[in-house]
Structures are given as structure tokens and as C-alpha cells.
Length: 559
Image 1 (cartoon, rainbow, N blue to C red):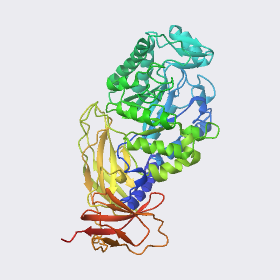
Image 2 (cartoon, helix red, strand yellow):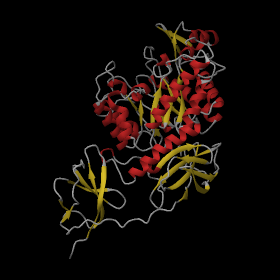
Image 3 (spheres, rainbow, N blue to C red):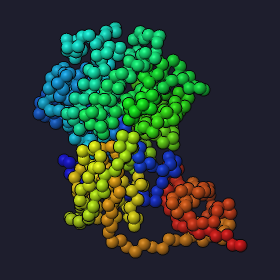
């Protein structure tokens, strides 16, 4: 299963690389090499997974197949980080010595499902080159009379409060912080998760909060500090994150309309980033227009160099949830990329079921090329040693890459490998278009292609630091001399336009691939009098952002 997954996914990526070495989607800018592309995968009430209850060997296999099908779709769409709901409502999808099994796995609360779903999810995410973070619902414990709540009422009655028909762990009780921290520490100690993700780390909506909001923020921050200490003591490389309310506070020109993180529910989320208590945040900006853009920028400007990947309310595109259109989400994704931060889908089912074409847009246009989760350089920035002795073996229509292992030079216990491929002489490992596989374990990789490629392999540690590359090349046909298109310094004569070429513009790019000028593709003669002297590649640009290189020109104004 593991080798098959790698071969199939690499074959798809290598095909994409071959056809896109000189292609850029100008509508959405350059595809960044480092960017969080995350999704919340919800288990409460089986909203995203599972549909099948695990009560027999056959039903376990069906349940696991449901999850791997979801992960296959996420991987294909470029998702590199899965927020997996692990602690649901004082109940778990993993073996815990503290809290009981959640009922959504078997249909029966407290029942062992016959396997460990979290361990299975970790293995399946890692083999697909994706990080997995345990999503912890911190304070809500669900209905007061539910099985899980009753167990907690027996064991820790003094830290609980009932509001209406639901129960909550009391954020003002000094025993709350060590209890929640012990849950997070247990996961980190037992499982190879890449992160702990805190949800609902705030005052409950219906809580009668004191007027002294500073004291309330201290109460929540005390819990965060305890969790940070517990997690980092176990494994310093585990990323700690949270999902705060989408608007941090009122802005100078834009009101939060009474619903914000810092004042309304005592989440001092931006201060947590500044103080080093959080490595990443995923604010839930499930709004549009002026309720989205200025607040997203505020999160970016107050991220203090940490990872930021706002949540997108894609569920509002579903007819039963709202009236959003695809363009609403497309604009938000494009804006987040323009300001240099990631994006997170809420939630998985609305994404993988292609609500209003979002999945198609992502896989075919916006996230066509892979990206790596940004490094946590504030924790440790020492990269691993480089792999060595990279070599290629051709075997039965496939290419087998092998290399000698690298080693970590910090607290990271191990390294994995990122693989790059290109038909250029030197493989540019900073170009996202060349990334064909990431977080590969072991020291070999089978690639289902017979085409001649040059390759590079970099080691990456658990903090996200990447080593210098090891490179290897293959014999290639002698490159052709670039085709120079005639110009007289005033106009350029374009080659005959095929009837099948759907293009509206001509783009002039520098040798480094940066667009310099754009002209309407209405005639075969293009005015270049205002174009600076230099050497340029010419590309047609179609309606869907697809480009085709037409040739090269050298403009040299005669004196």
C-alpha cells in the first residue's frame, strides 16, 4: 500500500512538472514553495468522517477506506496539513488513559473500535507527505448527561460547569490548565503527531463573564501556557496552534460588531504569538467583504513571524448553509496568497465533495503545484546535513532514486526528504513547480517515468528546516537554440496563430521569469517601443490563466 501510493502520486506530479517548467498562472501569481494549505477534518457527529461504524473486521476496513479516500483527495489537491479532530467532547478517537472512546467511531460511547484511528490517520497522512495535527476541543464536554460528560463528572467534578443542557470545563478553575495540558501531553508522548491544535480555547458563549476582561484573558492564557510547557517538554518540534475567533478585536476603521477574540471571549491570540506561546494560528474568518479582508490583514501584520493560515467558511457555499458563490472564496484565497499567508478549509466534506467547483478550481488552477509547510525557525533554524551520493537506476520503465541518509543537527529525532525534478540543467529547489514529493521516509523513491529528468533531494527535519540539495542528472538531447522572433525595435512580428490557441494577451517575461509587460493579442504585430532593451521570452495568456511560450526576442535600440 505504501509503495503504491508513492508511485502513483509521484507519477502524477512528474507529469505535471514536465508540462509546466515554463508555465505560470498569472491570475494567481507565483505558486509559493512555503505555504500552509490546511483542512479541518471533523469527527464530531461524523460530519466529515466516519460514515461506517467500526464493529467488525469488515466494518473497520470500510471505515479506514473512507479515511484513505478522503486523504487521497486532499493530497491530490495540494493539502499539506490535516487538522484531525482527536478529542471530540471529553472523548477521544485514540487510546487514552484519561478519557473514554468517542461514540462516533463505533456508535457506542466508550467502546474500543478494534484499532487506533489516530495512529492509522498519522500513518496514512505521513505516507502521503502531509502533516497531521491533533485537533483538541478544549473546554466544551457536550451534553451534560452524555456518557463522556458523566465520566468526567465522576473523575473531576470540581472543574465542570453546566450551562443549559451542556457542560464545560471551567476556565477560571486553577485545576483546568493542568488537566487540559495532561491530555495534550499524552497525545504528544504516545503519537507521532506534527502538531497540537486547540479549538474553543476561550470563554463559552453563554458564560457570564466578569467585567474585568483582563482577568479573563489571564485565565485563558494560563491554560495556553500550561499546554505549551507540557507539549514542548515532551517534543519541542511539535507545532502548537489554535483557531481563534475570526476577528481579533475592533480595528481603527472597521468594527468587529461585538464578536471578536480578545474582548468578547478573552482570547489574547495575537499576544500568544508575540510571547511565543503559539507557533501557528488558524483564525476562523468565516465572513465576506469588509468583515474578512481588513481582519485577515490584521492577523498577518500581528503574526510576529509565526505561521498564519486563516480559516475559510467554504460551507457557506452549500445550499443548506448559505448563499456564497465560488468567486467569494476564490477572491479570499487569492488575497491571502498576495499578503503571504496560507489558507484552511472548513471543512473537509465541503471541499472534497467539490462544492460549487472549489475542489476543481484548487486542483486545476490555484494549487496546481505542491507547497511545504513553513519552517518553525523561531524554535530552531539549524538545517540537517545534506543527503549524499544521489543516483538513478532505470528498471522496468521506472526510475529508482537512491541516496545516502542525512542527519539532523538539532533536537529533531529524524529527517525525511523532499524530492525535486526538472529538465533544466540545474534543478531549482526554490521553485515550487519542481517539487514532486515531500516528507519521504527512507532513502529511496520509485518514480513511474522513462523521461529524462534531473533530480535534487533535500533533507528536512521536524522543525521544517531544509538542507542543501544533493543533485543528479541524466543525459539529455542537446538543447535547441532559442527561437528568436524578428523585431525592428518598434514592433515584433508574432508567429502564425493556430486556430486552437485560445489567448487574449501576450506577456513579455525577463530571463528570470518575471512578467515585464502585457499586450493585447489582437494582431500579429505587437508594439514594443516602450519595452526596455533586453532579452525576453514571449508567452500567450489564455482566459483560464494558461500560458504558452511562443519564442524569444532581443530588443536592442539602434543608436
